[in-house]
Image (tube, rainbow, N blue to C red; front, top):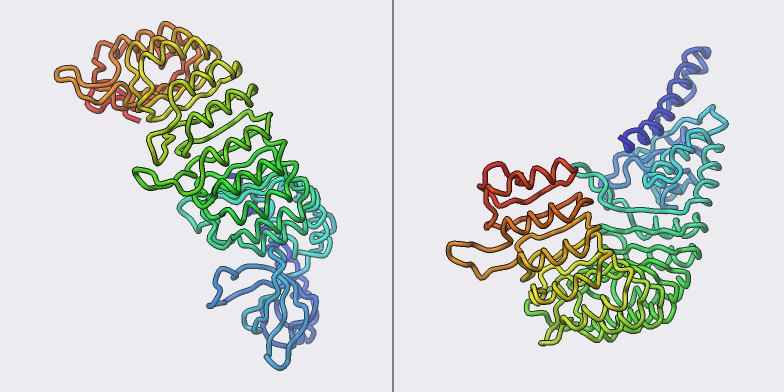
Length: 480
């Protein structure tokens, strides 16, 4: 709904301008109207330097069709016009037939409309569409961009033209020149036309950057080496899926970004199974933990790490509140062990979210020791672990503030003939008795559950807890 509202603002503004000029043309003397080129005319005589125009009919670069800009000068030798694009500040040479006039607005004060765009993630692109309406709109857009603090390029339009196709290095360079107050940059999708050069251009111009989410999978060690010295005020860095980032890049982050509080390296580990070390692990992670002593959120999901990293967390991160070590693997036999996780639990009294997805060494014996150390947990992910009824009971009896609990595929295989795998009805009873604040419970793959616990699940639902992923085929179960 928000996207449609913002689009309607821009389209309606231009449409009203066209209506007004059409009405004025109809009221003018007939001989003057005949000598004045229409708004869609593409003749040489109709085009003048300074005109605000829209690109149409390009074949070589169809993604530019609909972009708006200003005519700069005519190039007679090539029978083309030089055009300056508002959104990316590119300069193009176009034939007259690829240029369509936009009409000048009679509105002098665009601030009321622009206030709708402020602080919205669509604002940058929508402002580019309304800037050509008039000089006052262009000035207002320029002022708005000067105060812009957040830019987000993500997969916004599902089922429609991919948003990420329009983001380029040129746009990021324009962002760096136009938005000195920017403090949040989010590039969280596969942006085909963005490289490290665009990222560096933003960092050079936006010296207030504190949050950078760069989980596009495209940036590598060289890009981070160029970026880190330009971002000394960085407090949040997300490099998820950037598999070409190595320890050298992380050491640079440790040296230049001492204020870092949130770090995500999810998916930075190698894809190979068994994993092959590709230059990222303890050697890069530990220096960050030692230099950035205010880390509160650490996501190492699937990232190669061992107890060396775990003990560094225990020593250096007393303020840690969120930890994800799910799927952590290494090329050799070393990995984070029970001793490493227990050291973290003993040293991080504020831990509230813990993700141990598919760590097979998380067992009932570990749960009995770990649960009393983390009574403040409100989110726990232990799907794919060896925890069964006894371990679940320990967690829910000690962590009574739990709001989100994932028990999918716990306890097995191995498959026990006649019993199946996973937790039983007893674990559901323990959850009902101890978790008064639970809002989300995931139970995929637990085929030991019987119809006897249907009333228990209904009781949880009545409290406002969404129970999802029950084993298919059980009557009365929600299969979300």
